[in-house]
Image 1 (cartoon, rainbow, N blue to C red):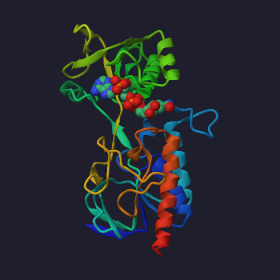
Image 2 (cartoon, helix red, strand yellow):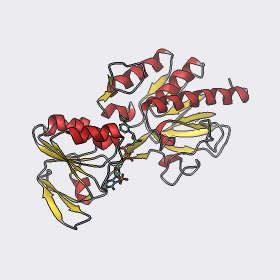
Image 3 (cartoon, rainbow, N blue to C red):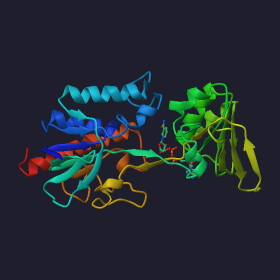
Image 4 (cartoon, rainbow, N blue to C red):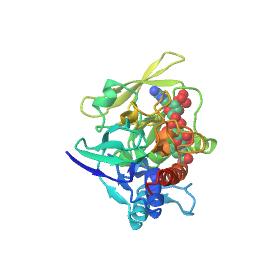
Length: 313
Ligand code: NDP
């Protein structure tokens, strides 16, 4: 077990974490950032980002995160690969975070920017065939289903965005929607409804993903009529929302029932002094790259002020 002391530790490498790193390094806090298991975060599994200000022609999600990282490195942020596996926030002046189980970091400030991860339906067949036709990322895996028929579950912006993406590659896309309306924004609803090769199955639930070694179909049920049917698809995509990556903080940090970290209104302060939260880990409402980046900036400023108040900076 190795250990070290730093003044500002940032956990997570999406727009929130990298923005916190940019601000913290420019403020002279010498931040250390651990990327987590998915360097760059959720934007690395998306294609076009068209709503981030400053990119009039749009930008690819992975490219945008490489730009964020390069900007943070330019100001001296120490960016490292590794996963925070355990924390001890019982000492309010020096917080302990273990990386990959064997490296201890002690820091008076910790910025939590761990984001969120895709949710699954919880079917045995879904998990068994994960990676063999079942995916939670159309952008990553849609390519494998070119000119084939696929299904996607969900009715939010993500499902609509991914269905539109799949419609460009695949012969046919079934959208499995559990209610009689979509949750997505009007513009996204209109987009999926305008595409001739997307068929929306309303009031429909997934009963089983069919196949032994690969997906050969999906059994769905109309919850109003009780009728079950089989869709002859070779790909099954799940886009039903996300869960915040906050489990390791549960013992110490106040959260809502879904696991989103609660922060003091108008700041990124948590219930533990010196621990700040930003990005999707604490935002179940906006969940945009731009809002994540904004709160990442806030977290770095909050950390800087906290260190100054304590005479540590
Ligand atoms: P949402 O929570 O918005 O939507 C989840 C969808 O999945 C809903 O239609 C929900 O149904 C459905 N669902 C949830 N659980 C199940 C289940 N067990 N079985 C079947 N269906 C289920 O998540 P998103 O990931 O779509 O979006 C998250 C946030 O990110 C939103 O605020 C969204 O606006 C934003 N976003 C913005 C984008 C953009 O601006 N370009 C792109 C993508 C996302 P029900 O409605 O019945 O609850």
